[in-house]
Image (cartoon, rainbow, N blue to C red; front, side, top):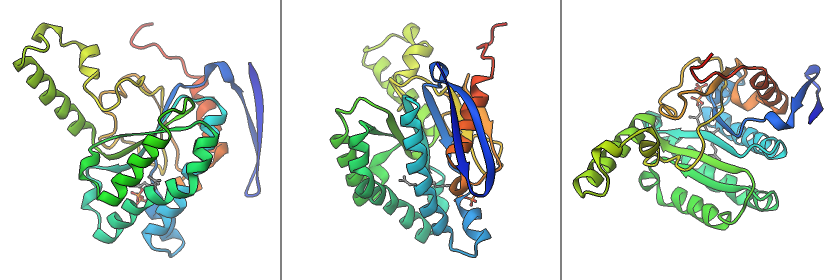
Amino acid sequence: MFIKMPFFNRKRKHESYELSLDHMPEHVAIIMDGNGRWAKKRGLPRVAGHREGMTTIKKIVRHAAKYKIKVLTLYAFSTENWKRPKTEVDYLMKLPAEFLDTYLPELMENHIKVQTIGQLSDLPAHTREAIEMAIEKTSENDGLILNFALNYGGRAEILKAVREIATDVKKDQIKMEDIDEKTFSTYLYTHPLKDPDLLIRTSGEIRISNYLLWQLAYTEFWFTEVLWPDFDENHFEKALFDFQNRKRRYGGV
Ligand code: FPP
């Protein structure tokens, strides 16, 4: 089924993309980059960019749910982000609770299920508790999975899997010869989610920054110069449209 989705934006001329609802990516992963630069351009503190970035999350979640995308994985805080100034880290740690406080009724209404990947145990108690509460409240929802990568690093995730596999081998719970790609992936945070079909990164940076290193093996990448707080439904549709026009060969011909 094809639908034409017009979208009007005061700043830009109207664009529309013919999107096929039958060929939506099932799993979209996003590196939400450029919050700091967005704030700097306006003479605002960096945290103002993160706050505006939270508004973008709301818009994109609504849109992803509307297009029946199954999983949206958002890179909200990496294992490297602890190196930022304490005031910025503290602010970022408050945002999940604020987001969930204001947005939980809408998540429930739209059957959205909150999940996370990453080492939650290292987060401050107030952040962890807010997230755990949302995970629990939305656990029966069967719509879009809104998956926050929090204190997440791809290498740390792979190392965690290796250690757990080694422990299980030692305990004779699995045999060395049974460790294949499928078994390995069951030890990752993302299990049992399908690997991302599409990765979006905003702000003009062209790298993956320790994000989903294993899972992005066959993912289509889409980069834009647009800063995350300026990213909107129209940009998202363009990414989906471009995805639908890619030929995926998975190493075949
Ligand atoms: C990267 O931009 C962004 C982050 C490290 C944080 C992303 C967080 C949000 C969008 C809000 C999180 C909200 C919830 C609900 C979890 P940057 O700061 O590195 O930007 P810069 O490269 O321009 O400095």
